[in-house]
Length: 253
Ligand SMILES: NC(=O)c1ccc[n+]([C@@H]2O[C@H](COP(=O)([O-])OP(=O)(O)OC[C@H]3O[C@@H](n4cnc5c(N)ncnc54)[C@H](OP(=O)(O)O)[C@@H]3O)[C@@H](O)[C@H]2O)c1
Image (cartoon, rainbow, N blue to C red):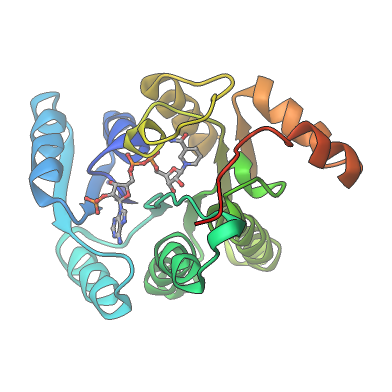
Protein backbone atom coordinates (compact mmCIF):
# COMPACT_ATOMS: atom_id res chain seq x y z
CA UNK A 1 0.00 0.00 0.00
CA UNK A 2 1.37 3.41 -0.97
CA UNK A 3 2.30 5.90 1.74
CA UNK A 4 1.56 9.60 1.22
CA UNK A 5 2.94 12.18 3.64
CA UNK A 6 1.07 15.49 3.68
CA UNK A 7 2.30 18.56 5.54
CA UNK A 8 -0.16 21.24 6.60
CA UNK A 9 -3.04 18.77 6.85
CA UNK A 10 -4.70 20.40 9.87
CA UNK A 11 -6.62 22.95 7.76
CA UNK A 12 -7.19 24.26 4.26
CA UNK A 13 -5.75 22.60 1.17
CA UNK A 14 -3.94 19.79 3.00
CA UNK A 15 -7.07 18.99 5.01
CA UNK A 16 -9.17 18.99 1.84
CA UNK A 17 -6.72 16.95 -0.23
CA UNK A 18 -5.97 14.15 2.25
CA UNK A 19 -9.31 12.32 1.92
CA UNK A 20 -8.87 12.15 -1.86
CA UNK A 21 -5.45 10.52 -1.49
CA UNK A 22 -6.85 8.11 1.12
CA UNK A 23 -9.78 7.20 -1.13
CA UNK A 24 -7.26 5.82 -3.65
CA UNK A 25 -6.04 3.39 -0.98
CA UNK A 26 -2.97 5.28 0.20
CA UNK A 27 -2.01 5.34 3.85
CA UNK A 28 -2.01 9.08 4.45
CA UNK A 29 0.30 10.50 7.08
CA UNK A 30 -1.32 13.73 8.23
CA UNK A 31 1.13 16.24 9.65
CA UNK A 32 0.95 19.78 11.05
CA UNK A 33 1.38 21.39 14.47
CA UNK A 34 -2.29 21.19 15.54
CA UNK A 35 -2.63 17.52 16.44
CA UNK A 36 -6.29 17.70 17.46
CA UNK A 37 -7.36 18.78 14.01
CA UNK A 38 -5.26 16.01 12.44
CA UNK A 39 -6.90 13.46 14.73
CA UNK A 40 -10.37 14.65 13.67
CA UNK A 41 -9.40 14.37 10.00
CA UNK A 42 -7.89 10.90 10.54
CA UNK A 43 -11.14 9.80 12.17
CA UNK A 44 -13.15 11.16 9.23
CA UNK A 45 -10.95 9.28 6.75
CA UNK A 46 -11.12 6.02 8.76
CA UNK A 47 -14.92 6.25 8.91
CA UNK A 48 -14.87 6.06 5.11
CA UNK A 49 -12.61 3.01 5.16
CA UNK A 50 -9.33 4.86 4.53
CA UNK A 51 -6.04 4.65 6.40
CA UNK A 52 -4.77 7.82 8.07
CA UNK A 53 -2.13 8.47 10.71
CA UNK A 54 -1.94 11.84 12.50
CA UNK A 55 1.57 13.04 13.39
CA UNK A 56 2.34 16.39 15.08
CA UNK A 57 5.19 18.01 13.17
CA UNK A 58 6.68 21.46 12.75
CA UNK A 59 8.34 21.62 9.32
CA UNK A 60 10.66 24.43 10.41
CA UNK A 61 12.54 21.96 12.65
CA UNK A 62 14.82 19.82 10.44
CA UNK A 63 15.72 17.34 13.20
CA UNK A 64 12.04 16.81 14.03
CA UNK A 65 11.24 16.27 10.35
CA UNK A 66 14.06 13.71 9.98
CA UNK A 67 12.96 11.87 13.13
CA UNK A 68 9.29 11.87 12.09
CA UNK A 69 10.05 10.51 8.63
CA UNK A 70 12.28 7.79 10.10
CA UNK A 71 9.50 6.74 12.49
CA UNK A 72 6.86 6.85 9.74
CA UNK A 73 8.99 4.73 7.39
CA UNK A 74 9.75 2.23 10.16
CA UNK A 75 6.06 1.84 11.10
CA UNK A 76 4.31 2.21 7.74
CA UNK A 77 6.89 1.68 5.02
CA UNK A 78 8.69 4.10 2.71
CA UNK A 79 7.09 7.40 1.80
CA UNK A 80 6.01 7.09 -1.85
CA UNK A 81 4.54 10.58 -2.17
CA UNK A 82 5.50 13.71 -0.27
CA UNK A 83 3.02 16.58 -0.49
CA UNK A 84 4.88 19.58 0.96
CA UNK A 85 1.92 21.84 1.42
CA UNK A 86 2.47 23.59 4.79
CA UNK A 87 2.76 27.31 4.30
CA UNK A 88 2.00 30.66 5.86
CA UNK A 89 1.01 34.03 4.44
CA UNK A 90 2.29 37.41 5.51
CA UNK A 91 1.54 41.05 4.89
CA UNK A 92 4.96 42.53 4.24
CA UNK A 93 4.65 46.08 2.97
CA UNK A 94 7.69 47.75 1.48
CA UNK A 95 6.82 50.72 3.67
CA UNK A 96 7.72 48.84 6.85
CA UNK A 97 10.06 46.19 5.52
CA UNK A 98 11.67 43.90 8.09
CA UNK A 99 14.00 41.02 7.28
CA UNK A 100 12.64 39.01 10.20
CA UNK A 101 9.24 38.82 8.47
CA UNK A 102 10.90 37.38 5.39
CA UNK A 103 12.88 34.92 7.50
CA UNK A 104 9.72 33.75 9.28
CA UNK A 105 7.93 33.13 5.98
CA UNK A 106 10.94 31.41 4.39
CA UNK A 107 11.40 29.15 7.43
CA UNK A 108 8.03 27.54 6.72
CA UNK A 109 7.44 28.08 3.00
CA UNK A 110 10.93 27.38 1.70
CA UNK A 111 13.05 25.66 4.38
CA UNK A 112 10.03 23.63 5.53
CA UNK A 113 9.69 22.21 2.01
CA UNK A 114 13.43 21.58 1.84
CA UNK A 115 13.52 19.80 5.22
CA UNK A 116 10.81 17.39 4.11
CA UNK A 117 12.49 16.73 0.77
CA UNK A 118 15.81 16.13 2.53
CA UNK A 119 14.18 13.50 4.76
CA UNK A 120 12.43 11.48 2.04
CA UNK A 121 14.51 11.96 -1.11
CA UNK A 122 17.53 9.69 -0.40
CA UNK A 123 15.17 6.73 0.10
CA UNK A 124 13.28 7.57 -3.09
CA UNK A 125 16.50 7.78 -5.09
CA UNK A 126 17.72 4.48 -3.62
CA UNK A 127 14.41 2.79 -4.52
CA UNK A 128 14.32 4.62 -7.87
CA UNK A 129 10.72 5.45 -7.09
CA UNK A 130 8.87 8.33 -5.52
CA UNK A 131 6.92 11.51 -6.07
CA UNK A 132 7.77 14.92 -4.64
CA UNK A 133 4.89 17.40 -4.67
CA UNK A 134 5.08 20.97 -3.40
CA UNK A 135 2.36 23.57 -3.13
CA UNK A 136 3.64 26.87 -4.48
CA UNK A 137 1.27 29.63 -5.65
CA UNK A 138 0.33 31.73 -8.66
CA UNK A 139 1.73 34.54 -6.47
CA UNK A 140 5.16 33.10 -7.21
CA UNK A 141 5.16 34.15 -10.85
CA UNK A 142 5.22 37.97 -10.52
CA UNK A 143 5.90 40.42 -7.71
CA UNK A 144 2.86 41.68 -5.82
CA UNK A 145 2.38 44.66 -3.50
CA UNK A 146 2.82 44.00 0.23
CA UNK A 147 3.73 40.44 -0.66
CA UNK A 148 7.52 40.49 -1.04
CA UNK A 149 8.09 37.71 1.49
CA UNK A 150 5.24 35.44 0.44
CA UNK A 151 5.51 35.90 -3.34
CA UNK A 152 9.28 35.45 -3.32
CA UNK A 153 9.02 32.37 -1.08
CA UNK A 154 6.69 30.80 -3.64
CA UNK A 155 8.97 31.83 -6.51
CA UNK A 156 11.74 30.02 -4.63
CA UNK A 157 9.61 26.88 -4.31
CA UNK A 158 8.75 26.97 -8.03
CA UNK A 159 12.43 27.26 -8.97
CA UNK A 160 13.54 24.70 -6.37
CA UNK A 161 11.07 22.10 -7.62
CA UNK A 162 11.98 22.70 -11.24
CA UNK A 163 15.67 22.35 -10.44
CA UNK A 164 15.01 19.06 -8.65
CA UNK A 165 12.77 17.86 -11.46
CA UNK A 166 15.26 18.28 -14.25
CA UNK A 167 17.94 16.52 -12.23
CA UNK A 168 15.78 13.68 -10.90
CA UNK A 169 14.45 12.70 -14.33
CA UNK A 170 16.77 9.72 -14.61
CA UNK A 171 16.34 8.58 -10.99
CA UNK A 172 12.73 7.43 -11.06
CA UNK A 173 11.55 10.30 -8.88
CA UNK A 174 8.68 12.45 -10.18
CA UNK A 175 8.32 16.11 -9.23
CA UNK A 176 5.10 18.12 -9.26
CA UNK A 177 4.60 21.79 -8.48
CA UNK A 178 1.05 22.88 -7.72
CA UNK A 179 0.28 26.58 -7.99
CA UNK A 180 -3.18 27.52 -6.80
CA UNK A 181 -4.80 30.91 -7.25
CA UNK A 182 -7.15 31.99 -4.44
CA UNK A 183 -8.87 29.26 -2.43
CA UNK A 184 -11.16 29.72 0.59
CA UNK A 185 -8.98 28.68 3.55
CA UNK A 186 -7.79 30.14 6.86
CA UNK A 187 -4.90 31.72 4.95
CA UNK A 188 -7.07 33.74 2.56
CA UNK A 189 -9.69 34.56 5.21
CA UNK A 190 -7.21 37.21 6.43
CA UNK A 191 -6.94 38.93 3.03
CA UNK A 192 -8.38 42.42 2.83
CA UNK A 193 -8.22 42.80 -0.94
CA UNK A 194 -10.40 41.42 -3.76
CA UNK A 195 -9.52 37.82 -4.67
CA UNK A 196 -10.43 37.15 -8.32
CA UNK A 197 -11.71 33.67 -9.18
CA UNK A 198 -11.77 32.64 -5.49
CA UNK A 199 -12.31 28.87 -5.33
CA UNK A 200 -14.14 26.58 -2.92
CA UNK A 201 -11.79 24.32 -0.99
CA UNK A 202 -13.18 21.05 -2.30
CA UNK A 203 -12.93 22.17 -5.94
CA UNK A 204 -9.26 23.03 -5.39
CA UNK A 205 -8.56 19.77 -3.55
CA UNK A 206 -10.10 17.75 -6.38
CA UNK A 207 -7.98 19.52 -9.01
CA UNK A 208 -4.82 19.07 -6.94
CA UNK A 209 -5.56 15.37 -6.47
CA UNK A 210 -6.02 14.89 -10.22
CA UNK A 211 -2.80 16.73 -11.05
CA UNK A 212 -0.86 14.62 -8.53
CA UNK A 213 -2.23 11.33 -9.86
CA UNK A 214 -1.42 12.42 -13.41
CA UNK A 215 2.08 13.27 -12.19
CA UNK A 216 1.95 16.65 -13.87
CA UNK A 217 5.24 18.52 -13.69
CA UNK A 218 3.54 21.83 -12.99
CA UNK A 219 -0.13 22.60 -12.46
CA UNK A 220 -1.51 26.13 -12.17
CA UNK A 221 -5.18 26.63 -11.37
CA UNK A 222 -7.89 27.81 -11.71
CA UNK A 223 -7.28 28.10 -15.44
CA UNK A 224 -8.88 31.56 -15.50
CA UNK A 225 -6.44 33.20 -13.08
CA UNK A 226 -3.60 30.97 -14.28
CA UNK A 227 -4.11 32.32 -17.83
CA UNK A 228 -4.03 35.89 -16.54
CA UNK A 229 -0.82 35.21 -14.62
CA UNK A 230 0.78 33.38 -17.56
CA UNK A 231 0.06 36.41 -19.72
CA UNK A 232 1.20 38.76 -16.95
CA UNK A 233 4.65 37.18 -16.97
CA UNK A 234 5.17 38.65 -20.43
CA UNK A 235 3.79 42.12 -19.65
CA UNK A 236 6.31 44.93 -19.52
CA UNK A 237 7.07 46.05 -15.96
CA UNK A 238 5.61 49.46 -16.60
CA UNK A 239 2.20 47.96 -17.45
CA UNK A 240 2.28 45.46 -14.57
CA UNK A 241 3.07 48.27 -12.09
CA UNK A 242 0.25 50.37 -13.52
CA UNK A 243 -2.31 47.54 -13.25
CA UNK A 244 -1.43 46.97 -9.60
CA UNK A 245 -1.16 50.63 -8.61
CA UNK A 246 -4.31 50.54 -6.45
CA UNK A 247 -4.12 46.95 -5.24
CA UNK A 248 -3.11 47.89 -1.73
CA UNK A 249 -2.42 51.23 -0.17
CA UNK A 250 -0.65 51.02 3.16
CA UNK A 251 0.45 54.10 5.01
CA UNK A 252 4.00 54.22 6.34
CA UNK A 253 4.04 53.93 10.14
N1 LIG B 1 -5.50 29.34 0.01
C1 LIG B 1 -4.97 29.86 -1.06
O1 LIG B 1 -5.61 30.67 -1.75
C2 LIG B 1 -3.60 29.46 -1.52
C3 LIG B 1 -3.18 29.89 -2.78
C4 LIG B 1 -1.92 29.54 -3.22
C5 LIG B 1 -1.10 28.74 -2.44
N2 LIG B 1 -1.52 28.36 -1.21
C6 LIG B 1 -0.62 27.53 -0.43
O2 LIG B 1 -1.28 26.37 -0.03
C7 LIG B 1 -0.68 25.87 1.16
C8 LIG B 1 -1.77 25.59 2.19
O3 LIG B 1 -2.35 26.82 2.56
P1 LIG B 1 -3.88 26.96 2.97
O4 LIG B 1 -4.48 28.01 2.11
O5 LIG B 1 -4.52 25.63 3.05
O6 LIG B 1 -3.71 27.64 4.41
P2 LIG B 1 -4.10 27.16 5.87
O7 LIG B 1 -5.51 26.72 5.93
O8 LIG B 1 -3.64 28.25 6.75
O9 LIG B 1 -3.18 25.86 6.07
C9 LIG B 1 -1.82 25.95 6.29
C10 LIG B 1 -1.36 24.62 6.86
O10 LIG B 1 0.05 24.70 7.06
C11 LIG B 1 0.32 24.26 8.38
N3 LIG B 1 1.54 24.87 8.89
C12 LIG B 1 1.84 26.19 8.99
N4 LIG B 1 3.04 26.35 9.55
C13 LIG B 1 3.52 25.09 9.80
C14 LIG B 1 4.71 24.59 10.37
N5 LIG B 1 5.68 25.41 10.83
N6 LIG B 1 4.86 23.25 10.46
C15 LIG B 1 3.90 22.42 10.01
N7 LIG B 1 2.76 22.83 9.47
C16 LIG B 1 2.56 24.15 9.37
C17 LIG B 1 -0.89 24.63 9.20
O11 LIG B 1 -1.02 23.77 10.31
P3 LIG B 1 -0.65 24.09 11.82
O12 LIG B 1 -0.97 25.52 12.07
O13 LIG B 1 -1.53 23.14 12.57
O14 LIG B 1 0.79 23.76 11.93
C18 LIG B 1 -1.99 24.33 8.20
O15 LIG B 1 -2.34 22.95 8.25
C19 LIG B 1 0.31 26.93 1.61
O16 LIG B 1 1.61 26.57 1.21
C20 LIG B 1 -0.14 28.17 0.86
O17 LIG B 1 0.89 29.09 0.67
C21 LIG B 1 -2.75 28.69 -0.74
